Image (tube, rainbow, N blue to C red; front, side, top):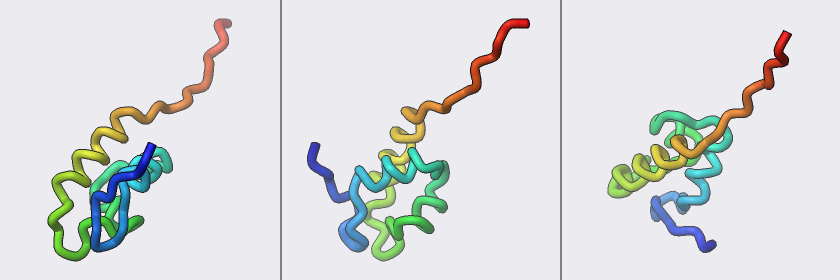
Length: 69
């Protein structure tokens, strides 16, 4: 699947945002700090937020299996 640029100013793609979510990013401020997304003109903020929210919603967390006593 080809990547789509979300932030042209800083060359941040949808894959970059999904990878950041998989690595633990949960807030837009954290995404900006890690990727520089939407730090320049800000035109991409809405799409970047939507992409991050969708990616976070799809992240699964490994939970330890509890053994019945």
